[in-house]
Length: 178
Image 1 (spheres, one colour):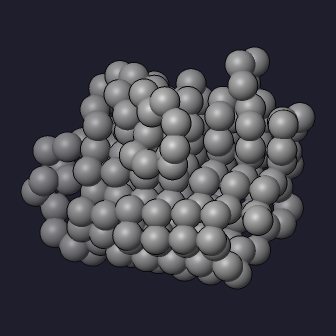
Image 2: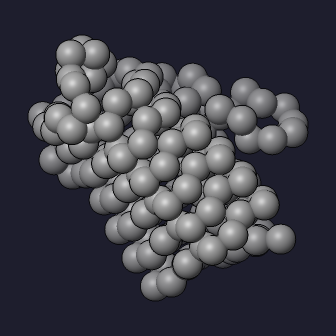
């Protein structure tokens, strides 16, 4: 996948075949990254992140994302999540199954995103919004892991967040939007 990303130009669509890919991806171009759904796995090999998005207009759809370990011992979530969206706007994440990740999605100063039709097994944080506005979070399924589910959705300094038609299993806090 990394090779295809390196050779892509903005507005390209990259279709990924079924299989397990042990990679940490950096998406720094406005592309669409499409998996086939249930059989396309990106495994971060228990590093701090699996996919890092730093470009506007990115679409990621149809993957299983697993194997991200949060080595952070405190403070802000920073880059320790399965997908990190960092200063990138108009990002769409859909039809993704997140499993075996300490933290799942982290958005830093990123706006106008859509998070839809995903499945989260939440260990620590499911979705963490930091200074990120105008989000649509809908039709997702959040279930706690057996370890430590703190928040399915947490927003810090975030405005205009629309959350509806999600299913949330037991967790310390389902949503926290102070």
